[in-house]
Image (cartoon, rainbow, N blue to C red; front, side, top):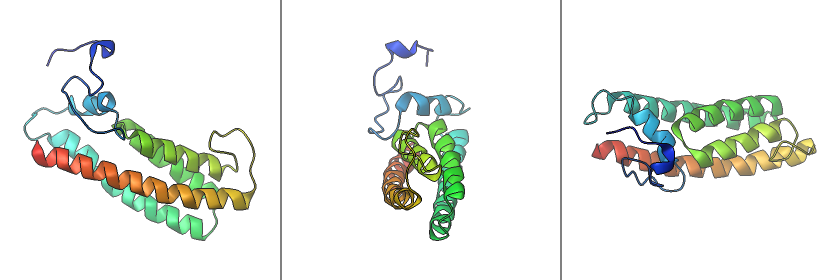
Length: 149
């Protein structure tokens, strides 16, 4: 596939991927472009399925940290999963993880205004539910994509 300027690509991306509004197709395509063989997509599939394992473990760790009321650990885990999800273009997951990171630092979702510890724990609990739903959505889409490729 010829390399095109990002401005010339369609909203779905240059390979016409329709991954919904939870995945940035242009970012995800950058991972796909690293595959040696477009038929088996061994490289990109290993990255995505590795992310699934990583995310599931991180969610367990977040649940444990929430039970222990460990805001610092929650912030660190949010930061960690934010980076991994950003690499794959999982925009909603990334955004929710960034909120968890900020709440763990006792600031609001944008990281600007300081918040009470109890408020932050409540917001993390709510955001953790949301991010798990967002994750389930992208997991389904990506598993379907790799099953058909």
